[in-house]
Length: 365
Image (cartoon, rainbow, N blue to C red; front, side, top):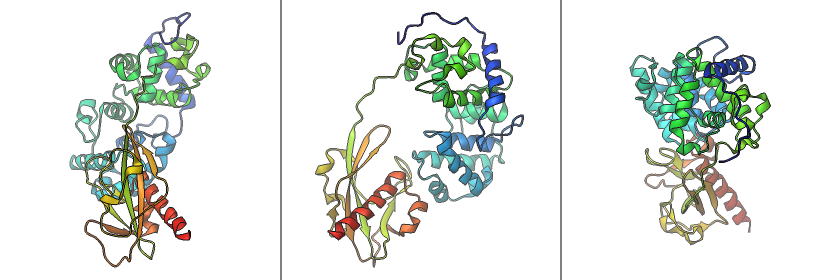
């Protein structure tokens, strides 16, 4: 066992727990820009957009992106009509750029259907970029279908509620069954959002505040010496390290050369400094072999490190001063003022900014 439980709490029926959660929600729901006012049905477009943006980030992190999107594209038809490049630029900084391409593709498909989102999970799952969690969230929140979305927060709540003694990743079937059993027929959308709020503010990964939780009377982990021991964490595997190079060619007016990555794959369709393949190896061994064109390339001090989900990247930076009179094939000049709006990923934006600073420092020596 992960943590011994001295005495399990009295069994409470799912309906009793659901009523307690909804009563808590009615008093303490968070105000978020994509949420409908109390008592009103949420707009499917806003629910879908927020759920895509919320993947891999927090509500606080997603909120400014959501507001930027709805300001530029207030409905799904407007988003569908937007150039993909504009969508990518507005998405820049959230990572996982396949989501931005799927967001645009999904908007176009919905627009072709007349702008109406399907209401059932099975139909929502057929849309580009919509997985099981997102389909269930849209069905529940936008259409009040009795769906049971399970994100990371909700998986943690259910693991603690039942004191599941297995990591989430290996226990999804049991967690999904528990979610369906707990979801009420009445107000399933409010119930799902309430669990999201409980997970974000009370049943946190560390230091859960069980005394404030409406599920506490029926929670097995709350009776354990250490509730946060549930769910147990899977054993971490070492993250592989890859190395690569990025080349910063700067013209006298401050502009620099960049290119767009292929539409599919990691950081797909984003702008980047040109460079070679990222491969296993020591960044100190990386040389200027993959330079995009001949120039007096100088390796800049140190290197840039970025952690992706499945590997760590160490990027050597090379700088060169060029005339700016020509544009090499496949590259484009980017003005410094346009860096933030040109569709660079967070990684490549940092690489360009770091290279500019380092070139100035090297020039002063």
